[in-house]
Length: 402
Length: 147
Image (cartoon, rainbow over all chains, first blue to last red; front, top):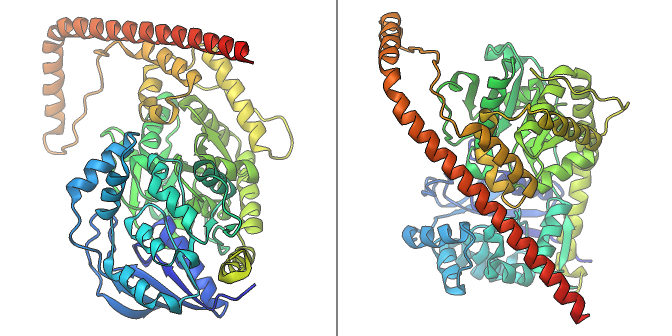
């Protein structure tokens, strides 16, 4: 097996400060661990910070961000949004589109020709190129430049976009994949078939550092006197946040419990006026405040059915708080089943019963939270994740097949 | 209003807890505890996740049966503006009392439409189910003949 000395991480945005996204955070953390292991790491990313506008808000060029060397490239400004949205809407609706339409969608997606040109010209200096998540034109095109040394961190979801022929080709062409969980690896195999013998396939995930916070601090700061559910992350239909709002409204109407919903993160979702006083939106908060909110919550609710890891659920477990997830969210349910750290619901009545149980039985809540915490400390300790990642990176240099 | 679910087993087994939750839900559903328009409304965002789930569809239809009648009962009238809040509530309450009678005609018509739509949906669903069942039987028969 060789050794990957110089690794490029290609990401659509650099996770930094308020720029957070699960995949971006994952890739930045992996890059930092590889750097800490003595490997040379370069992050290649765009000048965008907003995943809504993709405007070039940062200066292009190479500079140091923390311990990492980062090179910023402008997002292409000539995308035809009309074409992009027209194909995207058809794909979202489950319509099978032609190869030409797929390419039109990818061409008018978020791209950076400057970044791909850099890869083409200077790609030889990198032993391995790690890139993801899969759902971006930029990642698709970057993976075409040196596929024989590209490892994909796909963050794959079971969604109509994953069925595109272009992505099937991309998965077959790259050197390998670093999956976040076993269900994600199984999904890729179901969608694209078994990997070729020369491909490096590994379930790596992301490590989490343990923390200790005051479980009452968040509630005291925000004057919350009763129990609350917590959701952290982007609020949008794909993340299942409308279900959470609808369920909370029904729960409050049907039960004499003053249950609040606390949300951290970004995105607007409609909240009925009567429910608004009971939904506490704190927006972006520091990591410490997020962890405090997690530690004090009755449960961390993650109703998304499109996750490939669920970092925030793992963080909530580290805080000793149980999770409540949607039964159709294969990855999050898998995590709950394996850890015994959370419950899953398919319909409102199951959600209501789960909440009633946690409210009436603090010992069950505690036991679930502790089981989740033990699971994260065991499975997602950085040492274990780092070992899996470095093994895969080195294997990609030439140890496996060719 | 909810009877609390009790977990008897020592230790923690999330799968067993979810099984117990589901058994409790089944029992309470049979008792009509979830025949509630608020439950039907709560499930509207969940439909896409479960559109291929027959059990959920049955449950959702039973929720719809409870939800198709428009609610025109009196409701708490509130005013968020602090200035003139009380007089505004009195005024709005008076307007509601005076005009409530005139909503009855609309209410009846809307309930009729909702009821007809629900019946049509139920009948179409039943018909489709029968059709699929008969196709599956024929397919199984043809397959067994081929083998």
